[in-house]
Length: 340
Image (cartoon, rainbow, N blue to C red; front, top):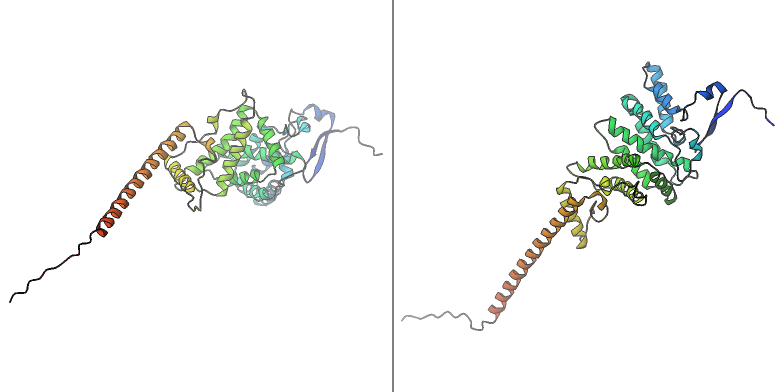
């Protein structure tokens, strides 16, 4: 048997993907504990964002890289006191309010964020797609809050991190996506709306480009929004978000391009790109956008039918002309009279 000191009590037990540890405190400290567990990440960020000399900054940069390159460090951050022990496929055990407060401090200091973002981007492709413990999926909830804070407090907005997060989410196993969906469904309507707005706002930025990319990165963003919509329609009606919370304001010219691609695919034309939204992600289109597409499709159909009739009529006229000329048996005769 091992004798343990009696003057300290175990305060928290953290079980992460790569490490596990416990923290202790004396009785006096225990009385001062708040409802949430002490956020080590927030304390580190407070230190990183304070004034320092060049030597200290060099050490801080190393700490930033180590912290945001480790899934276990992020997964053990911003936990709800005691409640995080109940983490399951139905509950994530995180304090979302604490996460937003912590990330706000992170992104508002340019020099700190410029070191943290590349570390997160390097971490995302390395995340386990089918982790054994559900605790390892907390990072996706935290990253959603991070993206929200970035959109609220930083400009101009880049979509690079959001696309990388979407790629990581869509790459998860079916079981892991099911857990994440369970956590989304447990969110309050206001939190769910905040999560949805992250992906909508990212797509709105992309849709504002003069040439909208139709690549895998954009499709992954659309897929995440579709996943959230699928979760939402299974929630009880009192907690469910209206469909309008998932729709975007879409430019008419973009809709026209998508419609042309969709019609070309129906005609089995060879396409290097496919329609991005039509018949794949209709949740993004409100009633007005759907009516615009319907009207444009009707006009294009009329135009095609009109052109087809014109070409058919012209072809028949030319064919009839050729047919009648072939019926003329009378040869062309040139009569000459010789004068003597």
